[in-house]
Image (cartoon, rainbow, N blue to C red):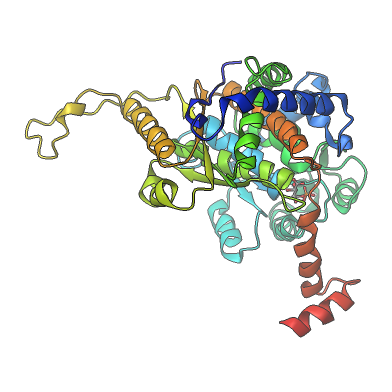
Amino acid sequence: MRLALNIQNTAKDLDVNALPGLYEEAGKALDVLLSGTGKGNDFIGWLTLADGNNQEEIAAIKAAAAKIRSDSEALVIIGIGGSYLGAKAALDFIKTPNYNALPKDGPDIYFIGNGLSADSTNEVIQMLGDRDFSINVISKSGTTTEPAVAFRIFRDLIEKKYGKEEAAKRIYATTDKARGVLKALADAEGYQTFVIPDNVGGRFSVFTPVGLLPLAVAGVDIDEMLAGAKDGFDTCKNADPEVSPAIKYAAVRNGLYRGGKLIEVLAAFEPALRFTGEWWKQLYGESEGKESKGLFPASVDFTPDLHSMGQYMQEGLRIILETFIKVENSDTVLLIPNDEANGDGLNFLTDKPMTWTNHQALAATAIAHMDGGVPNMTITIPDKSARSFGELVAFFELACGISGYMLDVNPFNQPGVEAYKINMFALLGKPGYEAQKAELDARL
Ligand code: PA5
């Protein structure tokens, strides 16, 4: 595993003498996770997703991706939460957040159904224009309102464009293997389906067809990503903190939490990692934020957010810990040019690579924040390759399972997500929710 974790900037806030005990606790939590004896143990199928036991499925994903790449100029991906964040994070990380705008050899990719904005949905319709497209609708339950609404709109669009029969050949449904209305609809209409395993929750599903199909369509080397994930899982399944960065990360963040740090800010210095932050927030927020416990996960884009959130980070409430992601090598070598007039006084940077200045900014921030009372860790990854993404996701997922058990919660459920759904169904007038609707209407 090439990912490395540096915790030296936590020393002021976390007594080194506390570390062995925290490591031991993290090791025990790892044991519980791997032996399948902990809370939510029917949702730990993600632990083996990179083991290579699904070659038939991978072949089917690649075949579908090849078809979409050959007959579509755009792929519309419909899903929300764990049914889209992993693929979006990976696409931005491995390719670029400007994927659609830059020259490439695959179709444009649009993510919709991750909200209820009519404007942004309509914009995708406009951007599609009269181009050929396919749809990948992703929903484990098949009943989530946001993607279901978007699917209605885009199914209508694609059926009007191609006719029902041809449209069915352009719709790919990723869902539960047997249950749910999406599965029933797919079977009735003859859509090709891909399975989200029963024992894998949405936020842990990027290595299932949920992530693999969109990424294969975008031309990502999914074998390489899974190889990175395998390496990451294998290394992180070790209880020795000197071997497993996941043990170290889970132990340190829990030690800091117990010492009064209530917010963890994930900070990356590459725009391509912005959605890695969004994916990570869901992973940790949904896994740990329950029973009135858990670090609140937030994310920032540095250096831009140093000019907005930097003030609070440096001098606001001292309840923050920070985790940096440092990408060692960029894809581009961009040297800062000389300027004879030197009107901006920057000639001391002549011929310096821009990436070097970015790394110096990270080092400067890490020390300033530590001095200001924000203990921080740095995760270093070599590059933004598919392999590195696989390693990073495996590291964060394993650490999340360990950390959730250290917190003594079930890291694999999300009971709190239901409350707003029930109210929304009631306010939207869903049959069966009449009593709740009357009660809510009276409160509005
Ligand atoms: O992690 C989770 O379980 C959630 O974020 C779900 O992925 C999200 O609510 C979407 O659910 P579904 O895939 O059932 O439409």
